[in-house]
Image 1: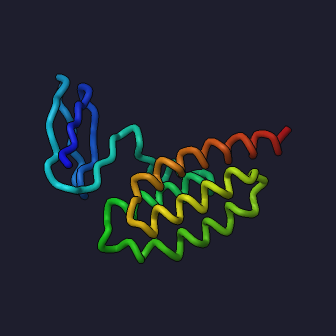
Image 2: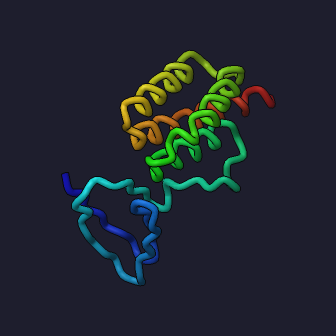
Image 3: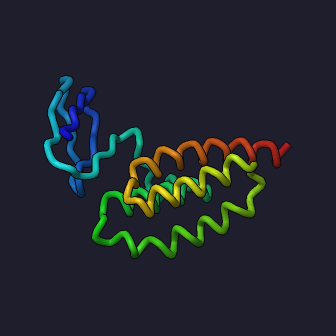
Length: 132
């Protein structure tokens, strides 16, 4: 199914393993084949990954954009999941982790990224409550 993208001026998007930078005007285009697509606002870099949840996100992102090397990231993913489980998160966070893993096993890394965003928010709230 084609994906229609509208890029804001100067917005970047990752398509496959290429980064596309838009010019000064809004642009619309359609991606006709199935390829990983991630908007600039949805990218967390390794340098920005300062929590376990964000490191999980980066790991899933690497699986998504480089499917040929997905298995290279499995060990990192499961080590981070073990770290996440011992954090003071509630049962909903654990359910999210299970759902993320199911999506990865099913090949839906994009959905796993969306779920990981929710997990990052829960992690942030849990850590803020611990600091109080």
